[in-house]
Image (cartoon, rainbow, N blue to C red; front, side, top):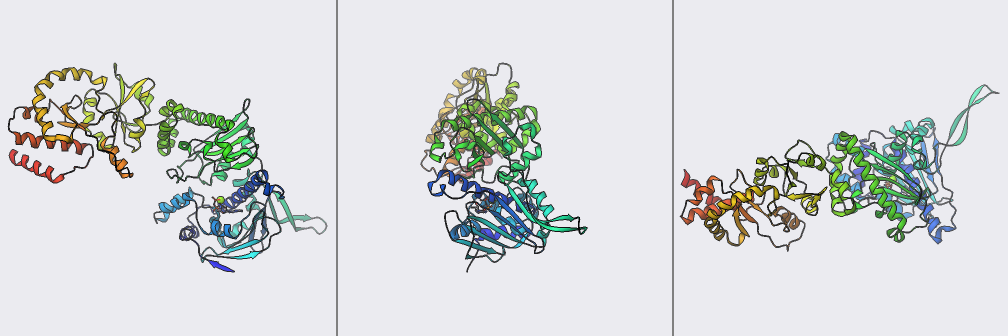
Length: 623
Ligand code: ADP
Ligand code: MG
């Protein structure tokens, strides 16, 4: 027998579990049954697709056996099983990025952590909430040797050879104090019905049933085996037969989430293609949402038979937070991953599913706006990724995304912004690059405030990249106000400034000579009301903030585009400068106007010492 240590992360997780952060220890049964069901799914798939497994017997079932006297429970399945190596890697380490991520988020504050863990299925290890000793005997399909894995959940685990007549896994739990309540057939049936009623395989419970013995006028204990779940593929039943609780239960059993989902969309398509989809939106965004190795949340079934749960092609990546099931009548049972990638049936199902999900969301946005905001709080950002990647659904996505704005508190939709457009207003405007507070105080907003034109505040770091590719909403131009071209709505100003531009010319020339190759141009601004200066970038060039971000992401070789400095002809400083002929003052002013414009855009100054020296010179003069 060999003794082994758990990986550090497993120890961490077990610590949490033992300290009972989980408020519903009963979920241990849901986790073990869902593992058994996964193992059966996997073996079924192999027997259908892999010649080496075709001849193996497949008699799928899950058996719970209760020993009330000794307070033990076994959960046995006839699934794929595990060999020695599998036992070590699956039950001794944590491979899932979601779990690791979860552990990284723990704060050490038991109360906060218990909320977190509540949203998160901890899988197999949850059994240590109710058991102080667990023995797993498993035999992998296609192999003869079985193995026993034993652990108290504290000091690591042991592994030794064992016997098992058929492939599959048996898990023996020795209940602890907390677990004793489950050494009760009635309680077990209740928990199975609650969480695992619609697992596709039959679950049997063997226990001592009380039976009335008429002859002896007493009740006898009779060892009995009964099926305790409905074992129906719930998603294939008509909506009218299903209750909210049915949907929620199925969600929890397929997602490992213990919170109720926000929404679900159940669709049965008949005709050209025959398929059923049931999609759920989790109340909280999955913890691996922003990881490259995210876990796929949609399972593919063919004619009620599980095919795979890791096919990234079922939905576009921006909808990776969606959980659920796609069940097709038209795909072959032995469909392979390679086939999936260019399968016409799947492409049609995928296209229809995306439309379905987005249009259902739009319905909710219109009919339950409050509830919709709960969705937006978690998923506004992935929707923006969709703008970038899903051109076909751009209009729908633009209607679903919510924005901060200069005109309203909270969030607003583009449709609403459109209704608030001024008479004669030609475009919709937004500002990107920087935090919300930086953007809200940007000098670039001044003229829009003055003209009472609404500007969207796009403060998410993906916004600049995403929205630079979106130039219209419902035929109205969408424009970034920190880009150089002057908008149609400022045309009046442009004309009015034309005269003063002539007078300004010598000053502009001087400023430009001073700033040299740090700027592309210096010109009179039409967008400023209160500030003396601002910087703008060319339409096709990255803004200073985007540049900082790209560099932070490792793209070191992007040249710094030169900004254009704009000055406000109506500002006191500029007016006074016009009357000065001494070059030293104009030079200091040139740099101070430029540096303050950079600061307002949140760009760090390349030479803060020079900035301070100039500022002090100017202060000295003025005091
Ligand atoms: P998850 O099910 O999310 O992968 P678990 O902690 O529940 O995480 O299980 C870890 C792994 O252990 C599973 O992915 C699977 O490979 C293996 N496993 C657990 N239970 C069984 C079982 N009954 N039969 C076969 N493999 C199992
Ligand atoms: Mg599991």
